[in-house]
Length: 346
Ligand code: SAH
Image (cartoon, rainbow, N blue to C red; front, side):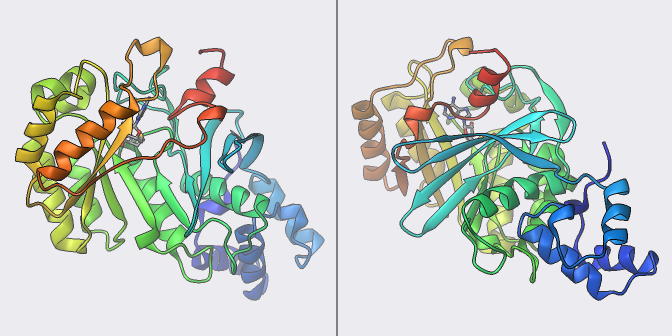
């Protein structure tokens, strides 16, 4: 693979362009074109020589929308093809306040959670910062947005992969996507979801990029959590809560716990009570999700009625909690399911 232009900040592009003996403003033209989702060849204000020089060194289209699935409710799911032929997936969800794009940070994943399709074939490779950003640039352009008037208003790092297991590229992406003059999505409109890589949660708190931190908890006790999330053997829930409090101290942002309700595992009355005891009084919110069954994994979700009952127990216990609305169900799949289908899995 050639290098990826979208990995770079405007300042880095300026340095490159100057080193090539070109005028500095050319970097601005290049950057604006890239932020509009254009290919190098399509940026009309660059000279032909500069374009061919760029094309020798860099990928022209590092992230291409290979397939789009449109749901009756307006949700769109995408399969993105990377320059080396690897596939990742993403979703765009429409809400009253704007559009939220879910992006992937790795091809596959090595966390191997029992309910998740992303880890079915392990980790293939990390995405570069520009490949993460490229998913947004491609979708924003497809939706008719520009860098100035964005169609994509919010971003969640909840596609395939564990963002904190690809730390340097993820942080570089966060700096570039929030940069003035670029697509400039504010950190408060970005949520990073982690299975709880505690040391990296502390590092992130110190980066000065106050994104919303979301932690996949899925169980109130270490023993039960370890049954569905191997990472629970490395870090305890107590470790996670300390790191979350540090994050809150540093950023002032309330943290969020994801809790996917799995029949016979974590969705009983006893778990709800333990969750209340664990989280009451903390500056946090609990986001309940009904498991999207992955046939390969042999786990089932619970009914909507039971999910609301679980939610009611949490609310009466004093927790701030919501049950995530299921959208786009007619076009299939959570985390890694579209890709698995494409690769001949489910
Ligand atoms: N690796 C990160 C982010 C990706 S997953 C993390 O673990 O947080 C985004 C969320 O979807 C996580 O909370 C994950 O546990 C959850 N998830 C994965 N597969 C799911 C499924 N089949 N049904 C419901 N939630 C799922």
